[in-house]
Length: 212
Image (tube, rainbow, N blue to C red; front, top):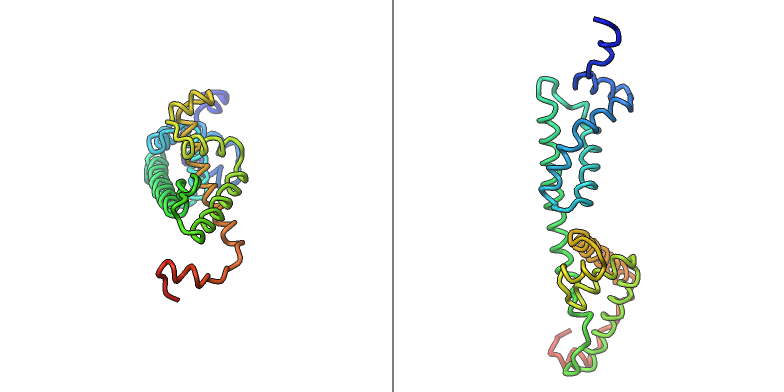
């Protein structure tokens, strides 16, 4: 067998792993290239959006790289990679679900709507303060995320209507709305943390039946 044919033979997973652990970037590039599509397909099944799947795939490969030294060489390398991919996707799903639940508790998009005139003057003042804070938080968002959130949560357009108006795929619209809501919650929390503690208005407390 010639030296050329030997050099052309694909490296085994064990060889690539050893080379990676020795700091060979080219070997890692080969591993990524050989397994990218498989990992991406797992991620896409979980998130259903191309851009999020790509981001998640990059996170998965970072986790794989860090865990290379723990791989049991008696196991199948591709099976191990898929197992890590699925576990990380499950963790991602749980994290996103928990964050959305937090947003649902902390951000009431109804507070962005005009306040009812039937409320007491004290309640109206508090509502106006909250609306101002929410609008300030909205202004801090990137314009692409702010536009998506406003069209969905204030103007109450459907995903399809927003996609047509912005000339974007519906998946991109959903992604922007989700990211916008998350960032809005973060901005709102920062603004709330900066607010000085206001003394309770005794008159307002008595009128609303709240005890000190």
